[in-house]
Amino acid sequence: MPAVQRGLAAIYRRLYRRFGPQHWWPGETPFEVAVGAILTQNTAWTNAHRAVQALKRAGLLDPRALDRMPRRRLAGLIRSSGYFNQKADRLKGFVRYLRMRYGGRMGRMKQVPWRALRQELLGLKGIGPETADSILLYALGKPVFVVDAYTRRVLARHSLISWKASYSEIQALFMAGGRGTSRYWNESHALFVQAGKSVCRPRPRCHECPLRDVGRLQLEAGVSPAK
Image 1 (cartoon, one colour):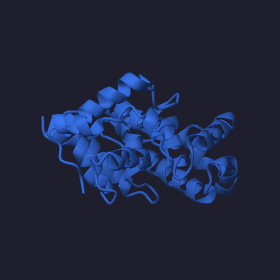
Image 2 (image 1 turned 90 degrees about the vertical axis):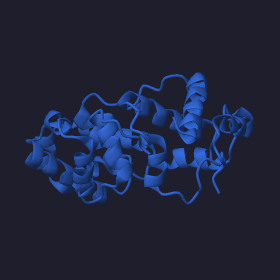
Image 3 (image 1 turned 30 degrees about the vertical axis):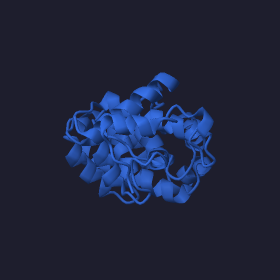
Image 4 (image 1 turned 180 degrees about the vertical axis):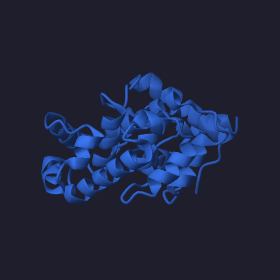
């Protein structure tokens, strides 16, 4: 295993011992998870969750029902997620794609290799890498690591990446060699989120951080600090 991957594996073990299994992503069906991934763009999950629950109460967590819903009413239902007009358009676009390409069935979508699916999702208006990968990993169980602001913050503060590193560069660090399973990437991403929310906050609580000695972990793994 390359040095960087050994360092990341050591960090994973340390975070897992501290925070335990995270049981991500909340959602009763793959379609609900995909909807949640779109709604959580640029907002806290609590806001997106409120919007998901509003859709559920209205009986709209179904591709056909959501496709038929007038855009204006849909936007009103998801207001808590912020940017609700844009997100209504993105949900409509995703549902249209799902129905036209896969007959509205997430199960059919899951049968396609993840790299091909990723390109399809990135071709949809308003679906960027983080949202696409969240759908792939959490809704479809594909072996892909999701990079978010928490991941970037934790890694950059511990000199594993540059603050200027791109999404694809960070993702490649994790996925080099293609060894990770969907379960591993699920837990890994969730643990970085938990670390970012609880200790590696905008104002960090370094004295509480389970990675306080990450410099030693890196040296033991043979990892050179990023510049």
